[in-house]
Each structure stands twice: as structure tokens, then as C-alpha cells.
Length: 234
Image 1 (cartoon, rainbow, N blue to C red):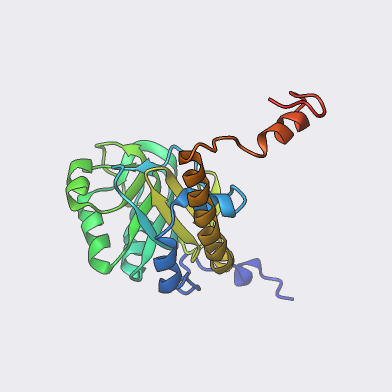
Image 2: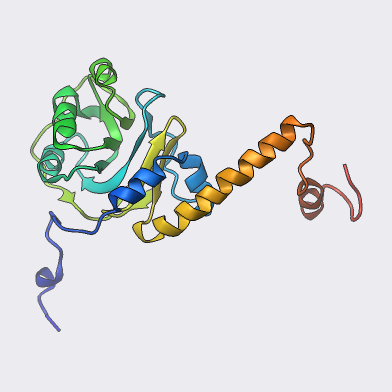
């Protein structure tokens, strides 16, 4: 056993990790994040404070995780330099809104290297220009203040963003409802389950349109909740 703790620690920048495949990303992009959150046990949805900068924005890709100090974007620049096409920058900005961590220049660089989008638990700026770029950005909000580039951080480590643990290589998918993260190892199985759920929901909506609006599970759920007595129905 190595007695030197520093020899057992990962470096601040982890360059190599397994990613969700491009085919899985393609398949996942056909589903709403809400569908994937449901089949994942209603887990993986980031806190609602992290929203699309514009409602039409959508993204799907593999997480490249970044941890920064509040108001400092040094490690985000490093992550852009290391990113691979199809990556989504998932940035733990500590929810800080006192300064924007990214703006138009960095978003253009992201697009140029093939980054699929940005999810940031923090603020951005140049929102009008980002809107015109139509580059997918999900953030806590905006702030015109610029960041510093002084503090260290980490890349390729597990982070907590919007109350959800995100590991490098996990699936990230977002739309107007918000962002969902799915563990890489579960993606293949959940994609199959998601396809079945879409079919079932389409059939249910068609039944509702034909007048069958009653939820078959409702009376039982109300009894279990103590609202209805045994054998009582609405």
C-alpha cells in the first residue's frame, strides 16, 4: 500500500475517460429529457434554476465536466482546448451569478471545436449574440460582469451541477423543460425503455382524444392515500 496520499490522487485534469457513443447520443436526441427522466426513475433532472437561454435551444452529448471557483473561468478555457466533438461542457460554477463565466467569444470557440452545448451552474453574458448564434446554452442566468482567470479548478472529475452528480462521459440532454443527466452505463437500456414509453404515451393520448379520459390508476391511488374508503370510487 502506498503511504503517500498524493500518489493515489487523480490529477486536476483528467484527459481520458469513456464517453457515451455518438450513436447513443443520436438516439437520445430523439427523446424529450422528460421521457428519459421518467424511465430513469424520475432522477437526473437538474434543478430548474438551470434553464435554456432561449426556449428553442436543445442539446444532447457526452459530459465534459468542469469545476471552477465562483467568478473564475480559467479551467473552462482549458476544457475547451481539451474537448472532443460531441462533448457538452457541464460546469460547476457553484450557482454564482455575480459574474458571467462565458460569453460570445468562448461560445464561438466551443462551436468551432465541435462542442455540442454548454450547461453551467452559473451565469453567462452576451445573451443576444448567443441567441443569434443559436448555440445551446443552459445557465442560471446572465450578468454583464466579466470573470477572472486566476484560480485553479478541475476537469474530468465528478461534479455537482443543479443538485445532480455528473460524471465525465455521462449523457446530457436538454430542452425547454431543463436538463437531464443519465449515467453512461445505463444509457443503452434506458433508450429502449424510453422508446416503449413514447409508444405507450402516444396510445394514451389517442385514447383521451377518443373520450377515454379516466385514469385507471386514480381510484386505487386515492384509496392508498386515504382519500377514498375501501371499494369507494370517484
